[in-house]
Length: 132
Ligand code: DAT
Ligand code: MG
Image 1 (cartoon, helix red, strand yellow):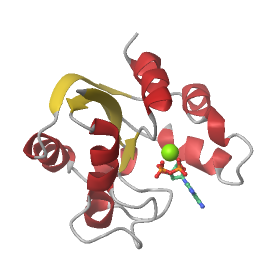
Image 2: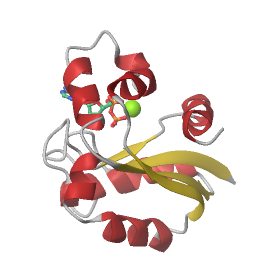
Image 3: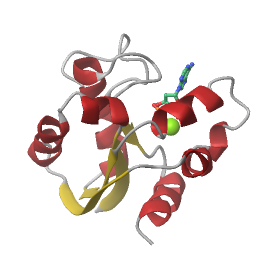
Image 4: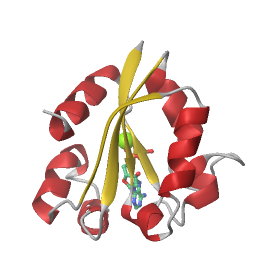
């Protein structure tokens, strides 16, 4: 069993697809171990995305991530990290495979509906960030 961190981003919350995304999470065999809704401050968004601090999209991304409520979920499943990234699809919704969450609900490479950890180390850090 492996754990990963998922986020339903502000665009998906505004679009009222929280329920559809959570249904998909359960249908894909994930156990939801913890879940909460919160509104990140700009500072918190900057901390969470610190790895991207030198990227040109850092300011815009952290503005977006602090622009509204999000839902954070601690998920468990076999191969959770890789499987959740497959269910999300590619970062850019236009490149994501049909049926993936980003293809279904994402709007742009920045407003792409959902987040998922990308490695066991990142997952551990991100889970600690939200669920101490
Ligand atoms: P992922 O979320 O697929 O792990 P990432 O870690 O490379 O992608 O980037 C984190 C987030 O930053 C991504 O979900 C959306 C935003 N982002 C990435 N590349 C971007 C770009 N070229 N322009 C604008 N936002 C971008
Ligand atoms: Mg990433």
